[in-house]
Length: 138
Image (cartoon, rainbow, N blue to C red; front, side, top):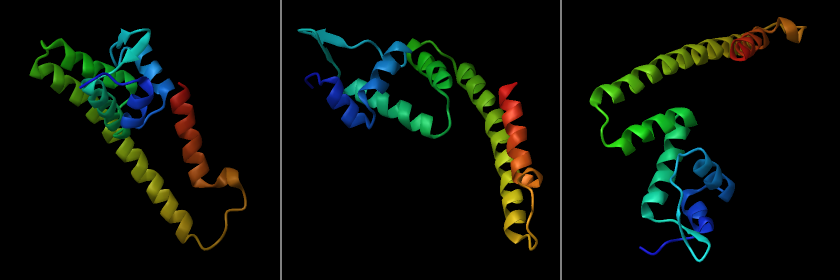
């Protein structure tokens, strides 16, 4: 395959050019080859960009993706390394599921409530979301 431009890579990977530049700066994709001052990307770059987007859509942070890619790229990672990353993510996923289930329960209670809540501050959903905000700020 001949090299493609960053614009073509962006189109094929479903991202914008700034995303490609950001991923390069962050080390998620390697610096591309250059020919006559133009960056050239190849099939492996398209696959990597699509992989990053897919994994990100599943809730992985860019830091987690970077760690996973580092394992893949090293060629020396062990199964224990992969299991360690999986265990860390399981804890986060379990917590997110628990939080979402609680929000779902609150939403159903609001939906089924016959009498209105006169104060937004007294709304259980607002109180729960404020709690989430405090936790994320810590």
